[in-house]
Image 1 (cartoon, helix red, strand yellow):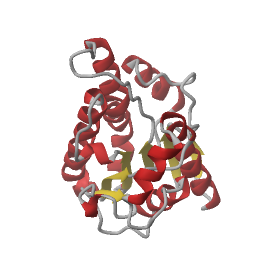
Image 2 (cartoon, one colour; image 1 turned 180 degrees about the vertical axis):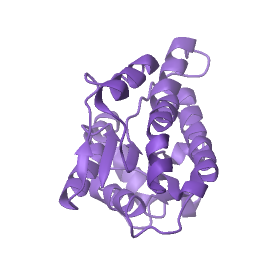
Image 3 (cartoon, helix red, strand yellow; image 1 turned 30 degrees about the vertical axis):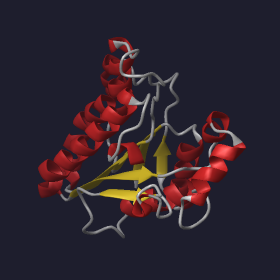
Image 4 (cartoon, helix red, strand yellow; image 1 turned 180 degrees about the horizontal axis):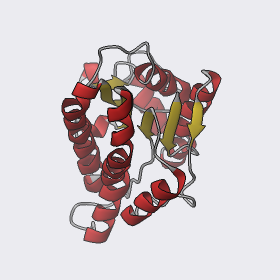
Length: 222
């Protein structure tokens, strides 16, 4: 299959990229320099130039400004929504004709635990991830007649460079103590689920948000 992946240079995106390549899929993963997702007009120009015949769309790119709701600027809020949500909608609009022609396809958005909950200083991010879930569920309904399966995957706490940069060793240990599996997720844990949902092995899962958090949410944050 031919896969279009955004955010392929981050830790999770790189693991997803490697998984698809290992499975023998053809992968296109433009860098942010090649495709600026904050500029919605750039998306149309990209597909007009390069074509949109993809069997799979995985949206892993994300933007996460840290600011209270009171301090958050409208510009930062809109930039977050553009990158995290609207970009996927615009991408899918270009790929939909191919989905409809082939009568198959997969759309997957990387969401977050904050697609279900909220968090202080993450108003833009949480709002975008809630919206991403709603968008993908709607796509599942509208594209189901073409056998296109659309889901989100919501990672819990993943052992990435950014996560370690933003959290002290003490904070990380506190988080791990609340995870029933007693470890952070590895990027490969997320990539494995993504690859399954976007493969012929997935024949009937659509419109779902798959939380991959080691049981963290089950414990009610205790």
